Length: 181
View 1 (tube, rainbow, N blue to C red):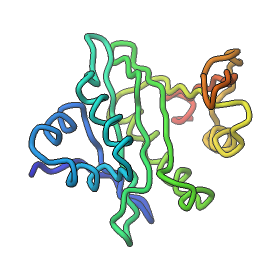
View 2: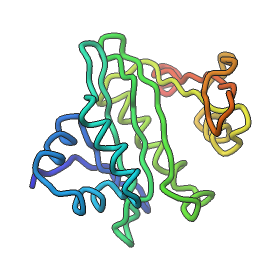
View 3: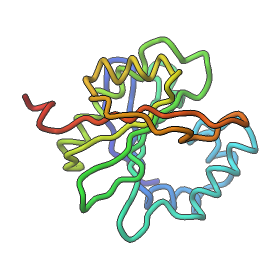
């Protein structure tokens, strides 16, 4: 088994997965192991992850860098945070995150993880700009953007199709120079 780079916070281990790591896992381990490793609970979640892997996480000009949020005391995957749509030559990426289920929400886990992952993005991935697209009614994510001092740049109308309806997204950005100041 290969070892994975990790970051640690007070309550979390942040396990970094590259596209090559994910390909390795799918090529060498069976479904039950992969479901546990990725913290997947249903066959449907497994099929989605498998499809992402088969479709490829990288293209000629962009990639992904994913972190699993593992709760230290239980050693359980509780969520993820990733730099997706990472345009390496432009030194910018979109950040996205989610918790596995509602029992982990509103406990400060994502706030705790984001600080370390933002610093990793600027210091290790050499990003200059981190972008976030947040539903205009997603109060917890809007609070995260405010906490980390992301700048709101505007709104994209009918940007996401969720639950059989179109939703607007607020566009946010955080710049390396602002974090160094």
